[in-house]
Length: 255
Image (cartoon, rainbow, N blue to C red):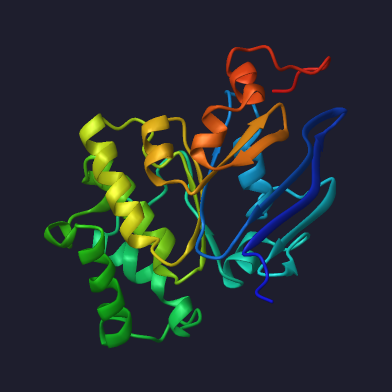
């Protein structure tokens, strides 16, 4: 039996006496696109930080392809096949677009950290980076400094970096934040293309993007997953409607 790509079992996270994540249960199957939505302060990014190892869980378990990743550091989780992007664009501003991508493919191709390697001689790294350049539509920006790219192109580059290492589980945190409608439409097509065959978890506020990409939608409210279903069923779910009207709140609200 094929294990789930990602599973959260009664995951909880406390900061001091405040419980931010309140027993979250979530499952994503291989190849599934799962959007995570919820009001501001619901705990969506905290969930991503727990999954990717930036925060440690207070209790519960997180499994990646059937193996627990609780207690592992972010780079260890990445090497097990999970990669993520961030709300704030995170690229090497003083490197070119191509150099950003080449850096991101090295480990997956078996190149470890060594100072004597002459990077231009690594034909497989160059070819893989060139493939991703074409995938994300930035071939014409190959030699441009990443820090000088327009915002939407920086986001496209970050998505490229996220998938470049060959991870089979991809986490994207608000990938279209700050984009115009035309830019968002382009980002949706890019995400669909570069995550084909992979498992995608995406935090996103733009409902057009969510309903355009997601196979299922998980709704997080005050640290709890109150619904996880197809877009049509989530849209008509009374608990979800209530939450978005501001009526679903525990006695002790969380930030």
